[in-house]
Length: 462
Image 1: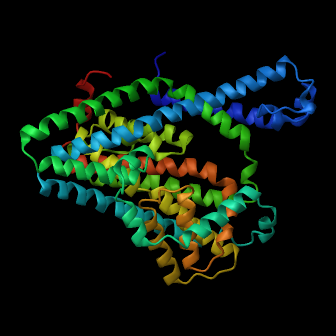
Image 2: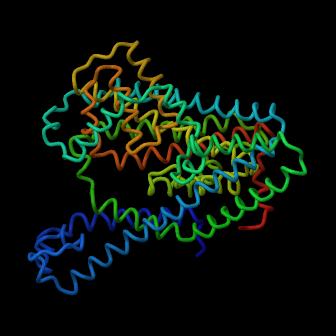
Image 3: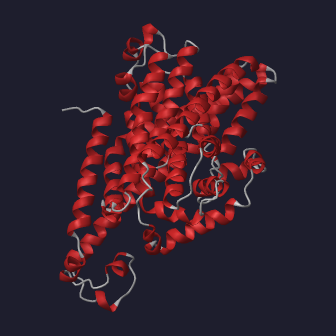
């Protein structure tokens, strides 16, 4: 039976989760010892150890399968990340250049940013509201701080230290690349987006006979890369399986112990954005004869959502998001390229909600009473700072530390939430990429560049 791609990916995700749980709970130190492995950590890291001298072929096969699974997942992500920068660079140059009239560019860009700002501030406000109502930090023993993993505590301390050196002016300056080639080489997506827009605008200001070959070249590269994405997606179900096995077998479900309420509050907020806010906006803001309702929206974007969940990276998922917005949702290529590219840096609704919940949760945990003005300030700051997270290691932690520092909540509390951050990051990445598709549908419809389901059905299959 021929299954649609999103069903194949979903099956891979479910099977990967089940396999990961079985490995996590059944592959115990006792089982390792029965295979002649006394130091599993050293054995899996291929480090010599006398405790593993009796390891046999079964242990060797187990390690090989674990390494193969890890390799398959990482290779898939690396391929996506390899594709992300060139597709943003070339497709956005073409999109801006084809918009032509600066007034049209301003109109499309203004509508895009307006939608992203609205959903960003709405998401942050929702995060503060649900955290205030359900109070996940109240009653949670602060003794949890005494058992923090050393790495998490160090990461929190480093983020707090960096936060004191980051200013809003510096964040704005960082959006403009000092060296455009370095921005491309280091995959600084906000800077790549800025570079693409600048080059695209420059192409509109020179004679057509000079700009046309450059636009055609960029368009050809972008189209070729998208074809590679379509080929790569055939491996997505297997890669998602491998990624989920690696993640779940390492963490299991025990990481939620002690932070269940906090985790559920975050997931409930993200689900509200994903299943209520986005479909409502697409339904209200697309024309009656070409509605993007709940079913159409999720059927089109589901492959990108599933890849986003397993990769935890909006940038890595971008090629899939763009392919879904263009070929499955029906947005014009120029609109999809423009809106989705801006969305990588400017549309982080899941991150905005998450930061608002984290700050409110830690304030409750440390007994810091937040007034209405404080909550309003947290909402504004969380939404604002989610736009263009600093392109530095642990950038999102730095942003979080900035917000905590403003309302006088100890920044070392970040280490408390790092225990469950990996799983929650997977969830908020789904929201981030779905928000890009939501914005694309609305902008394309407003510009009369959204294909109907009938027009999509007539297109040749990729």
